Image (cartoon, rainbow, N blue to C red; front, side, top):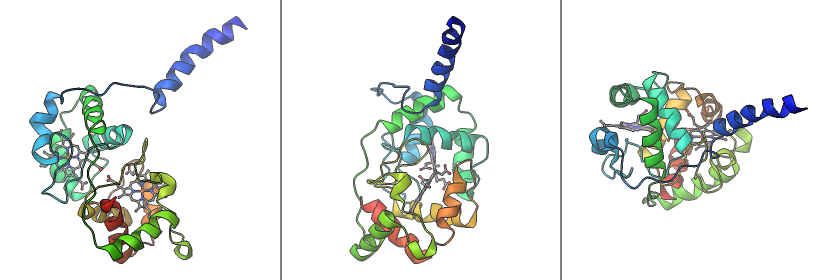
Length: 208
Ligand code: HEC
Ligand code: HEC
């Protein structure tokens, strides 16, 4: 009996570390030096760049997702062309510690504001987000990304993301060019999405 409790304790501790969200960390007051030096130029210090639509907003993004992506750029498993061109050179030098700090910084920034979008596209995209497209076997996006698209764990936040970036990533998943560790789920989701439906759902999400 005694032996069992002694043994299960480290196991529980390991489990707690492995479960995202359980390892609580306070929001930092100042950006890590690395953010200012290597990321601000494109993503902004607070994760909301406004001028460059193909560069994703990182503010309030899921911390776990950010860690996963920075590792995927660093180990080369996220290998779509803009990833190779822009993110491989900057992620190559990041240590695990830096990745965690950067992820904590951007995930604790104020969420991006909704962006303008065409009302017809937004309405059609809303339907796909809530219900999927039954006859094509496209699942409802909200079932994984959350009812408000706020994301959690490995599921990215999509609310307020740039439409151009969302469209590009959905095409990358559909063609299989983006094939990092958790991308297989999105290959299945996008397999039967048309370009029009991609535009609709991107308009809806950027407008949230
Ligand atoms: C020269 C511009 C540039 C710089 C500098 C840059 N990025 Fe990026 N970043 C991009 C682009 C472009 C993408 C989209 C890549 C793609 O399409 O796969 C991106 C994607 C990302 C993503 C994925 C976000 C998502 O929603 O999947 C993260 C995380 C990220 N960058 C973090 C950083 C961090 C941290 C730094 C600094 C260490 C940094 N970036 C520096 C241009 C840049
Ligand atoms: C079964 C769960 C699941 C469903 C359903 C789902 N997604 Fe995803 N989605 C994911 C996961 C997991 C990722 C992260 C993939 C990765 O790490 O490569 C993701 C990534 C994304 C990204 C990339 C975000 C970024 O910042 O790079 C977009 C865009 C996206 N999903 C849109 C959608 C849309 C639109 C739908 C509905 C048509 C949808 N997803 C349905 C699980 C899901």
